[in-house]
Image (tube, rainbow over all chains, first blue to last red):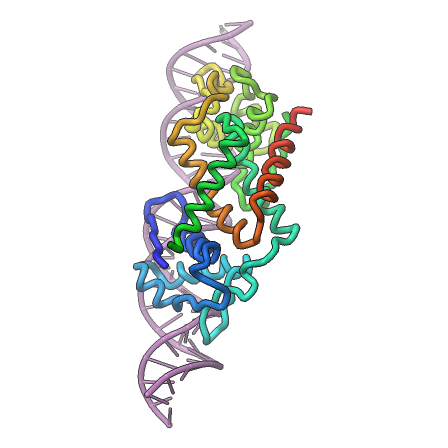
Length: 129
Length: 129
DNA sequence: CTCTTGTTCTATTTACTGTAGAACAGTTGT
DNA sequence: ACAACTGTTCTACAGTAAATAGAACAAGAG
């Protein structure tokens, strides 16, 4: 599990971390039940603050992607790979909407959009090479 | 052109405004060359501050979606509807990536993803009913 | 000449981001 | 029993972004 953080990105580093963990879940590198490093250890490893790792963890906990068990550790949620609820689908759709609006303006045809998605999905799953 | 702002959303209101203007461009309600309200008038109309509208305008200007002509007004960029550059495609792909990672975890199959996209695109274009 | 335009400036408040250090209480391994 | 480690909680600080507010400026439009 390789984490790469871009400190000067517009994306907050706690979100970068959370997103890359979620990619690990998506590509099978982090199967349900897998332990994640302790907040302190991860922070030391990544050269960031414990509280920042904690923020990423709680962000993922809210998404039910991980389980935080006090005094024990942090683990990939046993039900991390599951069928999306209607609420989750709507949230994804809302996140997709402004991107699609721009894509329409930039004349990205449906086919090209699908190619882009397939390529990105393949790229995410390649993380588990 | 109806603008609806959710003040208590996690999305900054200047971004909500910019996104909805971009939807107007996408669905043809705001064709290239169309004038947009002045910063002051728009702010008064939407019940927000002039500087906030200005921020949305400059955000869209950076995306080359609108043209801000000092002392004259704000207009939809003459080339707002264009072919995406390679740089723009890469940016869209980067924005898409974390959403797709979550979609994989939530077992959204490629077909369902495509349906969701088609539905959202239709929804955007319905704004011009 | 007057109104409107976008721009620029200062100012203030609020929230978010990130770091920092300390203390607490329960778990784990020896 | 002991030491090390766990997530939690608390205070604190600095930096930035978001949003509002008011004022002034210079140039275009009628």
